[in-house]
Length: 163
Image (cartoon, rainbow, N blue to C red; front, top):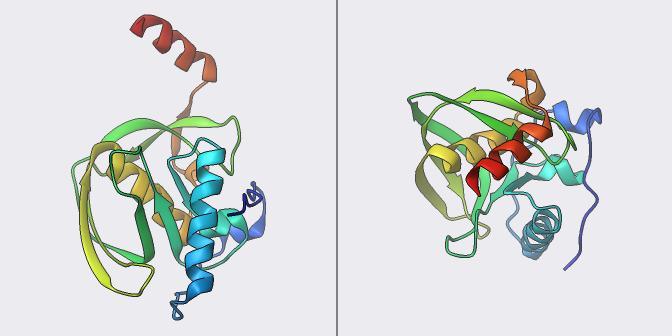
């Protein structure tokens, strides 16, 4: 597998809505595997194809080894509910963190790497990550949704409080 280069802001590919995937082949599978390796290498929990230079509707969310990797091809949000404000970051905005309001609950329809359709419901942090990546596919970046920029030192203070 290959670690891909992360595209950073202000590259225009990040603000361009992505094309629907119509071919489900080995090349798509390789891209998904490489995206996952790239995301892990950069300590991310999600990554979208435009972040690696591909303007197609493909994204991944992966929290830990206990949960299955969520591969989303041509995802569509079918329902949302609730609301919460939490701090987000983004691989395409190194060092930028901010409070973003998003729905607490999401339901999506998407396709797997073989083209099979599936539905998924998620809440909390998982819903937030899914919606963040789907925003990428629509050319919407989290910096436009930030209510308050958070200094990284605020994270260090929280970690010290937890010890």
